[in-house]
Image (cartoon, rainbow, N blue to C red):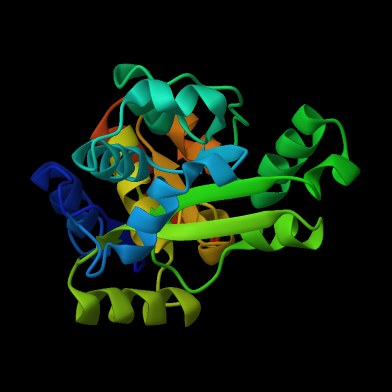
Length: 259
């Protein structure tokens, strides 16, 4: 095969073994480890001034979990969120909000920043209406945020407050980013819907499709493919819902020179 394939650290050993048997070099991304922010001041201030926002927008289940935990630690009730519009991106985020009995007004159905922006714009009645709105976005720390930029360009006020942080091995994460940007990864082999979500969390849910553009992705079944589609990915799905079928698909495309 002669290809470098990236897989989840939680992937079954069978996946790595089959890939290696076909001559692939297999590497794993760092295990996801989530923790509270080093400083809770900004999050606490946003919570205590929630009346100043029109929208509360969540992009990950972790964002929901850590925001609501702190919200309740500060003595607030879930019912206090009823005065806000709530947006949720992704099935896992929606499920977490529903389990916490938080109402949801908008589910864009895609992690594409452009599509999320378009969904919000359509919901509020046009671009002009966005300039009068204030958004609170609980999230992990990250260097770039296209959605915040798009909303800002429409003159909305956006506070992207850090609700949690990824404390995965930083050296390994830097190495992974270097491999991706340098063309050192040929394929991504997802083994489950959770593996897609984990990689998105590691790299950035809204920017995942851009970050790994040009890298082929593969899925063993329709459930995993559906989750990948949420993030703007279009993985090749094996002919059967098995690890072996997916590995065969990777090998076939490799032999055909389809990169």
